[in-house]
Structure formats: C-alpha cells, structure tokens
Length: 116
Length: 112
View 1 (cartoon, rainbow over the protein chains, first blue to last red):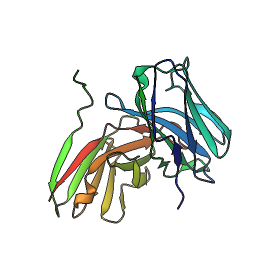
View 2 (tube, rainbow over the protein chains, first blue to last red):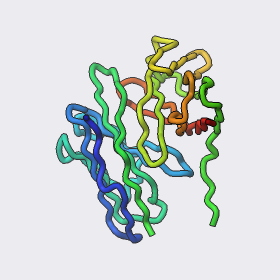
View 3 (cartoon, helix red, strand yellow):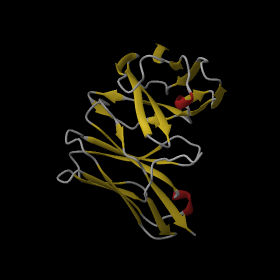
View 4 (cartoon, helix red, strand yellow):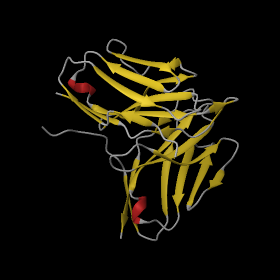
C-alpha cells in the first residue's frame, strides 16, 4: 500500500529552535510538494520539487524556511529559527508528472507543529 | 483569546440524499482539476479529477462537472453517507503541476 510518510506527526518546540520535518514520497513519484494548513489561510503551497530540483518556492518565507531533497526518497522542510506564527499543519504530497500531464497527488498525514 | 479563521461554507445533507458542492476558479489557464476530501486529523485524500477537455467525469458515487465558460466546478455525491462528512477542497493546476491552487473548502455535514 503506497503512501506518503511524514515524520514527526506532532512537534512542540520553543520559539527560536530549529525544526526539521521529513517526508518520504511514494516510490516512483517525481514531484514533491510542501503545503501548510492553518485556520487563517487554509492550504498554502510552500514549495515543490520535480526530479529533486526545486521548481517553485515562492510561497515560502525565505529568511527562515528551507526545503531540500537530499535524495529521491527524502524531502525535508526546515524552519530556523521557528516562530509562534509558524504553528500549523505541514503536509507533504507526491505525484507523478509525465509528458506534461499530471495525475493525482497523494498527501501524507501531516506534521502538526506548535511553536510556543 | 478567540481565534478567527476561515469561514468555511457548510453544507448539511440528510443521509441518503445527493450532495452538490461547488467551486469557482479564477485562472483561465487551469487545465486540470481535482477534488480532495479531508477528514479531521488527516491529510487531503484524492476523490476524482477532470481535465479541461472534458465537462463531466464519473466515479463511484461521485460526479465532477466542469464549466469552463464560467470557471465553475462541482462535485456531486450520490446517496450521501455519514462517512462522507468531511471538508471538500477543489484544486486547479495549469499543466504539469505548475501551480496547484486549493480553494478554501466546503464542510459537508451528513445528518443521520
């Protein structure tokens, strides 16, 4: 049963600390997304990768957020330093794009981040 | 203090009735549309998709209708069940995941 795996599921941290969220996309998928969901803003696209290369990270605060794909099986989203306004649920999703035709994106269960 | 969040439109439907959830999109270049279902505490789950060269697509108990003229999308759920209670999002994209944009969502409440 192929699925996107995110760790940790929950994270509580103090303001100023570094937070790293991890995602294992579905094997064979070539596109990975990071979304943030809050009550105020809904689902926001932070960044996404195609074949491990960042395609668009315009939705991400550049001064404190960074996203990488060290290899095809791991995507990371890092916040340094974290702030209370970063509290949200962060979702990773993966999908397959072939010949410029996209297909459904599968979402992970999310990481619920609370910054106090 | 009290938090102010998105006011999600809510659709209340009697169990067994049909549900229709609507969505408007703004980007006329969008050519791929997806409906997702999100249950409490879970990630969005794919329901059905449609490409812009179609105006209707059916799945199991679900039908998506696309009207490109007015940039409108709808999701019809037949014989709504309690398990259908969730928040439903439409999402649109313009080719190859250039920019997948989600709507604000509609909360579906099924009354037993």
